[in-house]
Amino acid sequence: MRLKIVFILSLFVWIHSFPGVAQSLRNPFDFPILLSGNFGELRSNHFHAGIDFKTQGVEGKPVHAVEEGYISRIGVSPWGYGNVLYIDHPDGTTTVYGHLQKFAASVAQYVKEQQYEKETFTVNLYPGPELFPVKKGEVIALAGNSGSSAGPHLHFEVRDTQTEEVLDPLLYYKEQIKDTRPPAIQGVMIYPIEGKGIVNNQLRKVELKPVKDKNGKLMLSGKVEAWGGIGLGIKAYDYMDNTTNIYGVKEITLQADGETIFYSHIDRYALKDTRYLNSFTDYEEWRDRRSFYMKSFVDPGNRLPFIESINRGILRIEEERPYHLTYLLKDAHGNSAEISLTIQGKEQSIRQPELENDHFFHWRSDNRFGAKGIRLMIPKGNLYNDFFFRYQVKEDSTALAATHILHNRPVAFHTSGKISIKLQTDTLENKQQYGIVRLQHGKPSWIGGEYRYGWIDADIRELGTYTIRQDTKPPVITPVNQEKWISSCTFTFRISDNLSGVKSYRGEIDGHYVLFEFDGKKGLISYTFDPERLEKGSHELSLTVTDACGNETRFIHPFRW
Image (cartoon, rainbow, N blue to C red):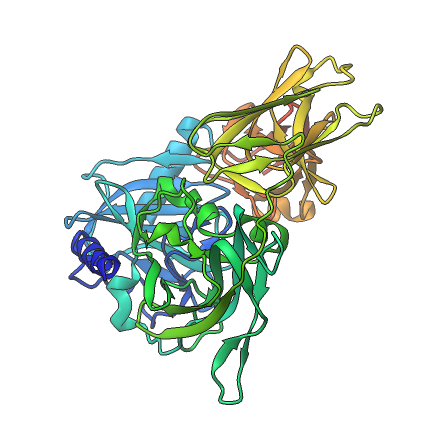
């Protein structure tokens, strides 16, 4: 009962601390709202910070300001939110409009001038309140697919202007969205707490899949016998009317023998806390199988504010009797799904992990590890839980360095750790061409780093398999539709790199900077002839592309316009 009262009080505080929550906002479009993504959805390394409005499958739909205010920030990037606008409102909120195709004309002109002044495509601009005031309903942009968007849509956020916490925009649009469909439960996972619990006489987690009984009621198949400290997790998605999309579940309650031991309700969070998703979920399950299980027990290093629990949600099984557990899931419209399971308490020997050559890492302190050719340092505040660290090495005298396997399962850091690997062979004159890579299924992912007396030092964001590779190959510049360049008044290229990745590019005509726009998803850059900056006549285009190791490729093209 005490925990339920805490939940109610917490929800009351959250709801009444939302700036302007009593009002509704204008639909940013002139057609009915359908969503392709909701607030708090589970994404790679982050919670989804807003809602995604569908744009009827196309780009170019006019985007309206949902409330009066002024444009406080403008961003342009080949990644992330792409073309994005931030509008500050009098009620203390900021709305965010991401993945735009084009800005309104006056904004676009200002952005272009700043890009030329700074000589860069990627910009973050902060115009003052007097420069771009907007009225409610004013067209501020056209919807698009820029940045890391996987298809045409509008990413929309509501933030507390002062704290920059993100709020659930659905609270402003509930009356405009039809949703009668409940969440759907995909599975339940049972976790023996390392060194403290056991399930079915094993230290491994056990997955249970839902089935329907003869009466159509959802139940879980499989027998579970456990002893000691046990955690649970659930995999589930939500659905809405008139779409086939899947969404995140807003509210999760877990009860044990009628008592609530875990409760989460995501309505707001600070952006700095978004990587706590890797503690809220089973990170190993996501990394290895791309499957999101939401844990209903709380790691000691998890600081998410929208979770309440008793004993961190860990079930103590200390009697040989059945333990009855029930999950209740709800969406923002109150649609719910429920599933129950029974864990039979059965005394079993709780085996401790093998400690030979292992190291115990503490979540609340700095952690260091060293072996031949490898140094690892994880600063305090980066681990979510204690664990026994395992290390393996694969020696290869023909390689630049040994391959170091840091732990036997994936572990994410909240910010970053530091790794140093020693070169076995150091022959490159340009030391910048060495870099640490992370190997996944044998495929290298470039981390990079700095050379130091035969060692490479780098920051990493998770444990895994690491070694050193070299990148001596320059980027590749490939002309696209070159025969149409002059008639279309547009130069287009595809740029790519074999390993370390494209770090920068610069286009010039007759020695003067010209603005090439970059579509990161497609690896395409393009320059459209600008009559205000390019006169008719004979010219020479120069395009230089540089990778993260300093390798450089230049393309020269004389032309007449």
